[in-house]
Image (cartoon, rainbow, N blue to C red; front, side, top):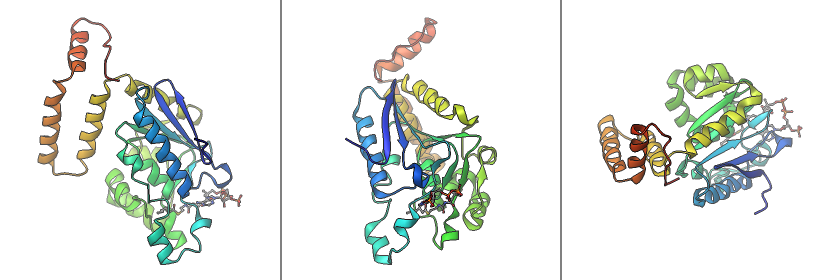
Length: 258
Ligand code: HXC
């Protein structure tokens, strides 16, 4: 497929999606989000891919949903059209891990897209924000829900209500991003992390992703029970035999299910 708004590549066992609307700082539109979904479908189906990285440009991961496109929306246009969000949860539903490599602006829908990924690796130039309030709207693609879960109520309220941006250092302190690296290294760092993950047993990686996500969807005791059941099921995999045998033999494991 010829993509209009993204570039899709593979690097080793990693699928790479680069947002590519440079004139609008990668502002998100329906086509772009649908294209991400299409690329993820391909990566998910491919036995050669174990993890995915989504990135933007040096200046912007994504500066939000396309404001020009939304400016004249009526309520019915917004409700019926479900602009950018009609296919939004596709990133979250991807069963393989997805890493966001963020440099520059990740604002509004851009911040929300990054937060839907399993982890965010940030350049020291990254700026996160939910500035929708300045436009007379509110975050509509998960910002008021995922941001407090990531950084707590106080900072989420601060960002959503004042529209101020949070730099990479503050974002790391607050728990929104897992690592901060110099801008020129952010993509390599994310690709290396993804390649590491892609080298492990895919079913186990998927079980880990499912279990960590469960922590945000259930009580502690339900989550612990879920983890225990999944943990026990890992012993049905030959990759568990291989991983433990390799440890005992002091050699590198060669996982079969990748
Ligand atoms: C459309 C955008 C855009 C956006 C930037 N551009 N953000 N176009 N939608 N979200 C365009 C600008 O119009 C400009 O086009 C070009 O990109 C470069 O931007 P500048 O403003 O000239 O750059 P700069 O001065 O460096 O400022 C960068 C910026 C600013 C701080 C990121 O562009 C900005 O505030 N953008 C909007 C951020 C925002 O409010 N995001 C939330 C959107 S609402 P021209 O043609 O003039 O060169 C949202 C809701 C999601 O995301 C929920 C939906 C369900």
